[in-house]
Structures are given as C-alpha cells and as structure tokens.
Image (cartoon, rainbow, N blue to C red; front, top):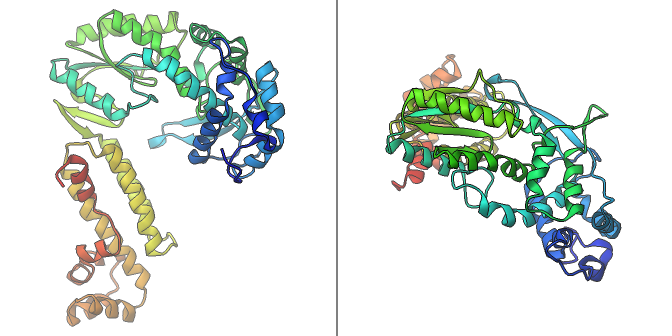
Length: 444
C-alpha cells in the first residue's frame, strides 16, 4: 500500500495494519486481514465501481473513512463483534420483460471485507470443485461451458435435461450452506461472520427486512458460497456418471434419449429438494432435443454454436436505442458508446458460428448511423454542402438534400451511400460488426 488518497491505510500506522499476528491453520481471520490481502480487495472493489450501499458511502469517501476507523474495525473483525450493515435492495428488470431480478448492494466496507474473505477462501475451495462447474471460477467462463456442451453433443448426447432452480439466490437454506462451509473452514469467528452476512437483512424503502433464506446477488462472496453449496450436486451427478455442465445455478445434463432424460430429471429433482433444500421450477424444467436447448444465450445446431434468436433480438434492440434520432448526444460520443457495447457483445457472442445475421446487422447499423448524421445536418443547405464535400454528385446531392422524405428512407439513397461511404463511417470511428466477428472467429 502507499499513502495516496486511493489507498486504504488505517490511521496511518503500518504497524497497526499489519498487527503482529502469525496466521495459523485455525486463524483464518488473520490471513484475511493481512495488509496485502485487504489492499488487493480494496483495489478490486474500486475497479468494479458500483453504487453506495445502505450507509450511503461512496467509493471516493471510503479511503478517508478507512484511514480514520480501520483500527477498531479490524479489532471487531478479529474478536467476532463486527456486525455487517443490511444490503440495499435494487430491482432491475429481466430481459424480455420476464419479471424482475432483486440485487443486494452491500456498503463499500462490507464489499471490501467480503472480497478479502473471497480471496482467502477461493484457493481453499476452488481446486476441489467439479471440472463441469464453470460459473464465477478462476480461468473458467461461459464459453468453456458452451464448448463442453458441444463436446458432449459430438459424443452422441443429443438430449438435454434443462433443470431450472426456482429463485435460487433467494431460497438457499442457510443451515445447509453453513454446514458445507464448515467442512473446510475451522475458524469459528469467520464462520460467525459469514453467517452474519447471510442474515444481515435488506433495506427496502427505508425498512430493514430480515433475510432468513438466500444469498444476496450483488455481494462479492455470494458466487463462491453458491458454488460451495452446489458442489454437492456436482459430486452427486459425477457419482451417477452423468455428463453435465453447470454455470452457477444454470444446470444442463446431457443424455442419449428422452426416456433417460425424464428418469434423470426425476432423480436429480428429488436430490435437490430433499438434500439441498432447493426448489425446482417444474414448469420451466424440461427434457429437450439439443436443437431446442437455449443455454447461456446460445443454441446448438448439431455441433455448431449459434447466438440465440432472443440474444440477437436483444442486440438489435440495444443498437436501435444507441442510434435513436432523439438521443441528444454528439456523433462522436454516440459512436464511442456504440463501439463499447459492440466490443462487449462480440466478446461474448462472437463465438457464434452463424454468419448471416451478423452480415445483415452490419449493414443495418451503418444505415442507422447515416440516418443519425442526416438528422444532425438538419437544413437542406447543410445536407447538400456536406454531401458535395463527401463526393456525391451535384444532382443527387440537391435532389436528396431538398427531399421531404423520412430520415430512415433517405438513409438508403444513392446520395447518402456515395457520400457517407463505409470507408467514411470507418474514418469517423464506427466499428464493423462483421470485422469484429471475423476477428473473434480468427479469420483476421
């Protein structure tokens, strides 16, 4: 750590921070609160940004607060008297209007502490997790999960048991979870602290509601705790010899026939409800041919991977918003935000092997951008002058510039295409969807 304003250096005394306590096998809290570990946790929380929690403290305010109060905070963590604050409830709509997702935003201090805990527990628990588990794990990703599905399909497993866990993060049984954490964590102070985080409550419109079930989505520790609980499911599936892929609570089991799928669904559903005390959504759970499976935003055509129809629709809808004529931003800012979204979407969905929608969207997006420029130029004189400057013939520039036809229709004319060429749009900074896709595919 250094003494800059962005560093968390409690009360300015390195000795107080380090606290001459040698970590032992049972003294997990000492390892968690080591200076280097907490500093790394703070850097991670800061890089993730995020809104204030229930105490209203911002990331910018935290270093000064930690400088003044860390000594007593650290002592309360070591002696087991620390009490986490309730998380702040944030509700966001699910895609396609499929209900709402409830997130819990911890205060900055609790995010730092949870991240510090996570950094110590991950190397302890993660090596024992299943090879078929991909969610929120080091060096693993959704792409790995999708490619594993492809491998199983190639081996002849053409039916999928798509098991839906109903409101998983809201229904985790605390006793079941804590018993599994205690298999490896022997420090009672740490166990008590994790239990307090689970029961810290949630602030909803000024009222604190108790949390007797679940792990709050949005907290740094929640994904690891979920994997610890569901690792028992993974081990049960392995013991039964099943081919499966799990990405957090998204589970797919691959089988060779519909009959086998129904048998597997019944057995695993009983295990989930009776042993792990979780709820299976029987209406959404199903046995389907691999061609009818949608998993993590992808579908499958034999061993080929496609972005799902819904993912492509959502992509186009978002692009339409970013190219809205009524959005009052400069073209430079519009293109910058658009490019940022294109890179993010393509980094995830670019492994899709379906080219035709990519090519169609590429041309559609350029037309949307031409439409935005056309509206920005506003007056006929300005439009004619700009088209002439860009190389459009005088006749076409005048005819198009004085036309009263709509923006969208005029964005696909000879004048706008010979003026605002693909090369000119590239010079303005607009990325090509097709070029991004080809780069991800390894063609360029």
